[in-house]
Length: 260
Image (cartoon, rainbow, N blue to C red):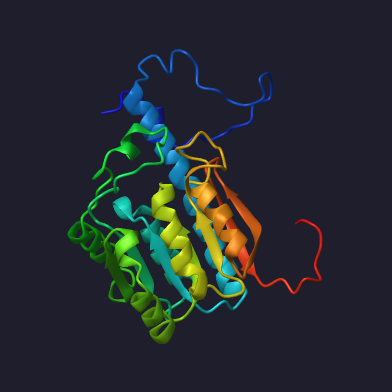
């Protein structure tokens, strides 16, 4: 267990009336700081940043009268999925369906050599389908509207499933792409292309994670490649922490110029 009480809180930046003008933890307060404290501190900060995004994202969806469903690729620990359910309920989006795509067996084998050792381990970051659904039921929001799609994306994201989505469900309002690896992201972007609509919000969780921030590798590379072949253009919407961004899909008639 973490020794420092401060590790159980996200960083609350408080002003001071003197140098250094913001309150900083002192050596005495961090005397017992260990790796477990660092993990808890980082997770608290990161999950708060993500939840702030979901609060604003669902406000965007409701205010723009954007009818559509929520899709999440990579559902480990059900954190962001529960955030989506909660904010959908706050905005009375009772028609929205919620799709959870995951192997429920952890990460696949990778050849893209990510910097994170854990991402190199097949089977890492596993939440079983049974545990996922148990957590959803305990959360108690729109549980009957949650649907799981089990399997590695190269096998589960089929044309038949794509056509079924188009025939039976609304287009995407918000898609959360949290699949870590380049190999996983490529079939995801291919799958969602026909499900997008003008105004669809794409949240890419690990845009600057796992490959030392380079856009030439990882999920960032997959997104850049997708943009080259997609019929949609994408404008940056929000920065989520240091690791992620969201984008709004739109159709460019060819008459627009400039950068927002």
